[in-house]
Length: 290
Image 1 (spheres, one colour):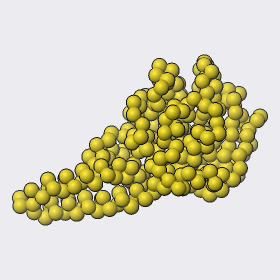
Image 2 (tube, helix red, strand yellow; image 1 turned 90 degrees about the vertical axis):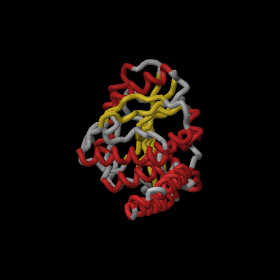
Image 3 (tube, one colour; image 1 turned 135 degrees about the vertical axis):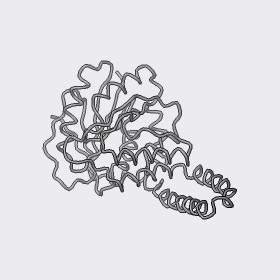
């Protein structure tokens, strides 16, 4: 039996987590050949945790309680390092705990690893549920990312990673800043499954426009050296157009320089020391046995 660990962060949204666990339990009921464990990283929630029961199709359910709030990306980083050092597993499925990563697509991830057991799988976003403004800005983010990095990144956290790949990324500084950027930079031969972004079970989406900008810059910053090189090339090319376009070209060049400065600042979020010492932020662990 192959062992799969489901990893998900939670901050206050316990109601969604309980519903998610119930839906996952239903989805995996008829999946043969795999055992399922779940590790929830509680990101120092300020809302008291309710009574949570272990779903019958889960071999175990563990909640890791954090001392300080670090954000879901860093909870995932800590969780991957924890799993890699302390758990017996073959694959890790990373997903959000609010319903936006649809549990039904777990079957697609597992079907893909069953056919190609040596390759990690990412959930490629083919349809989103947010409003028009957000979706437009998201498309702009993908375009800018491609122009300045040469990388097409069309996936988020939702993925199924092999043990080998978890080992590879678990000590990469970029994991502390951007999961998808780290995956794209350090792993090859990724498989994909189509994914539709679901609706949150309860409450509005926590991905604000500001968070989208930070998220976008964090991904791009993983490839900062490519960004600097491509930006230099673009600035040089634009220099030949100054005579005909004048101040327009100069303004674009200034914007590119400022963009690179911002990328450099955001790249400082990558912190190998903080990643390695992240387990120090664990307050305690709770094994749900009933």
